[in-house]
Length: 220
Image (cartoon, rainbow, N blue to C red; front, side, top):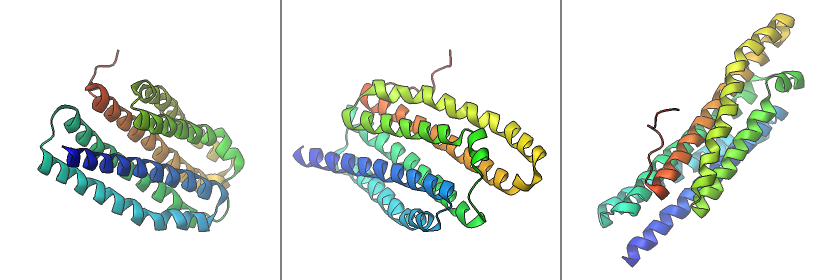
């Protein structure tokens, strides 16, 4: 049992490391994109290999834990949740990677007025708030913080829904912004997907701690 406890702690620490690493990737990807910083973008792209390696390690450790200790109840929920959380985090890192790749496609910094009208900063700050809730919920096993993620995700959904019409209007006003507008539109879509993935992670934390399946509950 002592070995099982130790192995569970190892997996838990690796999961937290993956969480902080992917959050850092998103932060750097956003700064690289907004500032047209090719060096920072390259850092995100290079670090993707580290994310992938940690992803594989966590998956292997979880499989070993299942095979060696045949966990039940909360230990089983823990491993199932960590595997899904790890999968979602790796996908978040993929979006950070893709956003950084756009820096090579741009000739100059995105026009500030485009960022403002699409509420890009609000979208990003909302994602960081969601990350903060997730991080604390993960560390402290606090489901109330995990639940706060759902409300924040609605903000991202609304910005995403509004983005097409806004982009259309901006292009009508000035066709010179077509390229930047289309790139920014794609990035907004990716950030909305990051929000969905963070919501998935919140659901897994709630499942692990409270044995409550949130995903398939009917909307009121």
